[in-house]
Image (cartoon, rainbow, N blue to C red):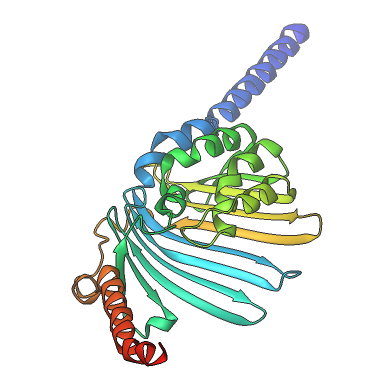
Length: 288
């Protein structure tokens, strides 16, 4: 009888332990793994970059030089509002620009408050140099390289896709953005391109924030420290935010109405030069 009683106690203990283990297992909800960086980035990247705000800085203490670009963009840069400031040895110059498919409106400090209208392809100005940083196609290689190296985690309600290090493939992919930052808006300097491509990257950090519900890209941040020319230390930052919030971006009506046409300025200058020739003609005749 004692053996039977002991056996019953043993069976009861086993049942209790099994039940307890089962209750512990069922009390823990199953956690699904985070989506891949590639699937998150590619879900709505192109539509997310339809319009937004950007800020870019680049500086070098050795060269006593820094620049800042800030503005709004829409439709792959076909409408862009840009303010560019270049500081060299504590002296700063600022220019403002509106760029469309056909026209460029420029406000320089020497214009004394007057906007000048010119063709978007005038002279040596290269509109693509400004626009390509807003074109999703520019980010194809960047996104591919980032997806291979980035970590994915939830932060403050968004998916945080980040890389922090010195990956050469990702650095090479972002080179076009860095080259554009080192050039003044609308210019292409091959020497600058060679300088960036041969630079030694010290650190590169890239972060994309993506809404887990809509899959829209909320912001993108790039930051790099690199050495160019073997001795010049540079720090470059580029941020895209307010994405999808500037669909109505357009050149203000008062700027379109009051801007002075560059062709009219050229025409007036030509007429003035002609007048000066006529004025000097009697003097020339006296000398014959």
